[in-house]
Image (cartoon, rainbow over all chains, first blue to last red; front, side):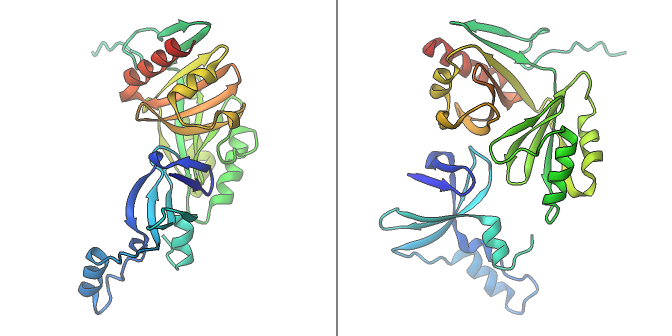
Amino acid sequence: MIINHPLLGPRDASEFTYLGDASLIDRPDWQAENVSEAFYEYGYLRDNPAGEHQELWYHEAGDRSWLVVTRNTLTHEISKVELARDVARARGRSK
Amino acid sequence: MHDLVAITALGGTDPHVDTVGGVTCTEVPGVALASVAARMGQEDNTATSLAKLIDAPTPDIGRWAGTTISAFWAGPDQWMIEAPFDTHEALAEQVKTAMGDAASVTEQTDGWTRFDLNGDHIPAVLELLCQLDLRKLDPGSAARCSIHHIGCFVLCRTPESFSFYGPRSSAGSLHHALLTAMRSAL
């Protein structure tokens, strides 16, 4: 499998490590009213889609950037690769 | 009074030199290193200060540039700075002064060990060692890759001269990897 790194171009998947669902970017507000419920869902509940899935990959044997890879879990086709920091900032995260 | 003896990463008093089929692998201990990471919102200021420090345009993705003090790209808005140790022992301090509050600077000297390969047919050695696209690796290229599971930087100085940076604690393993590939390819 080849991951088309947004900065470095096509790189072999063996250079990357997989973390999991990209929803990990959306860390709940720790001061919210429903914080324990929100963190329970954040920590344990995952969708398991048969189809397009956004996931976090780490370019460990390369530039060490975190990526959000959109991959089809049925075909393994990768349709989009973005820097995770760009995705996080687009979702309103500042850090 | 302590009576300490300086040794290189491979444990010798002098840098290790190996020659196989016209290619020389030299241990290079005399390098000062510091890393630079731009702080959020300060990316442009960091790039400007860096260009002034190395007296050359700030290296773009996958490139290195500079003269006495040079920099190579290590990641998004991150660079490694290298300079001769003899004249720039306090490199991190110098880089921090140049960057001010725009970037975070970390001393890296002796965290890494460097081997230089000089000679013809180095790509033949490289293709046994790493997965980099060698057709794109021209003078000025700098890339991070895995060599025998060791995270290394590979810098192309000229087609006949390459530098390898690996973790100092894995110097022996990296040296073994380089020599094995040289004996096999050359």
